[in-house]
Image 1 (tube, one colour):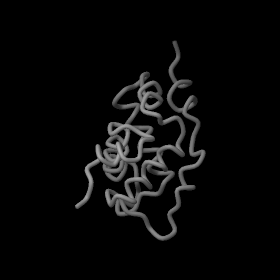
Image 2 (cartoon, rainbow, N blue to C red; image 1 turned 120 degrees about the vertical axis):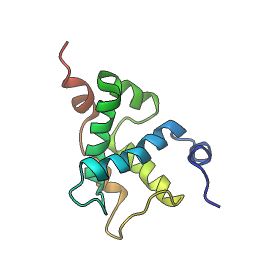
Image 3 (cartoon, helix red, strand yellow; image 1 turned 60 degrees about the horizontal axis):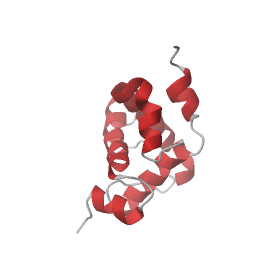
Image 4 (cartoon, helix red, strand yellow; image 1 turned 45 degrees about the vertical axis):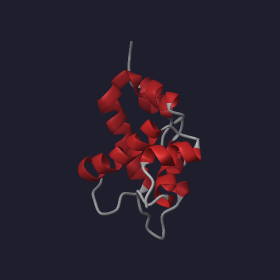
Length: 117
């Protein structure tokens, strides 16, 4: 039987369930609003979708929310995706890699610098 996301988070210990649920929600958001090919979303495209979703949900607080959950880089998104792949919540194509999530964008630039005070 497939584990729920709370169990996955607890067992893994790196990210809270809310972080994992956000990335899962972000896949649907990205497929619907960002991806040109909704049947397959690349790591880079998912990162862009997660950025849009975070800014839409939390605005200026996006960086704080993500950092509080232990998400500090796009590589963390990749770690969460591959955690969900291992637990059959997501799937990957043979040419996909966790490295597709490395350095897609800088969090400070994406979530903080665009806001002028």
